[in-house]
Amino acid sequence: MKRHEVYDCAAGCPVQSTVQFIAGKWKSVILYHLLQGDATQFSTLDRAIPSVSPRMLALQLAQLEADGIIVKKCGPAVDNRTMVYALTPFGQTLAPVIQAMAAWGTAYNAAQKDKQAAAEP
Image 1 (spheres, rainbow, N blue to C red):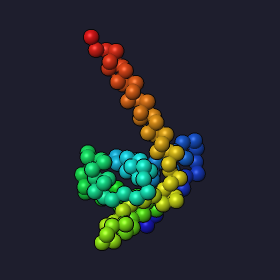
Image 2 (tube, rainbow, N blue to C red):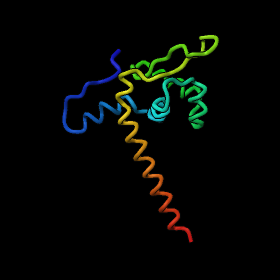
Image 3 (cartoon, one colour):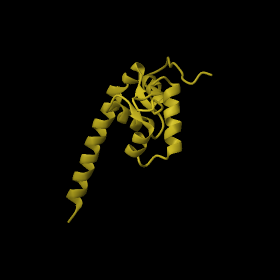
Image 4 (tube, helix red, strand yellow):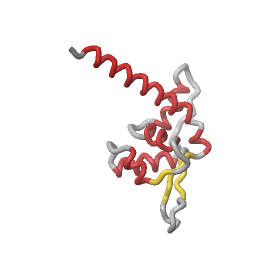
């Protein structure tokens, strides 16, 4: 089953090519957290993103894994059964995209706080 398209069309298609991998309410947030460290357990991601349900987190992780963006492997736990998620080399190529999104979000949030502060009596 073919999940993703290779677009060869007018301007905007490169963006569409990227979005098909990171679309979804939580995928970019998951990638942001995975970029912060080498490997992360499900429970760590679940705590870091409290607004996502465990079911949705598992679904988004499975999609990212199916797309070759992340890998699930045995972690360095004592029992060697703890699973951790890490970016693949392909997933790491999304770092500039996610970092740019984080920088834009930080600037936007700061501007909104300034706007609210200026509007207060």
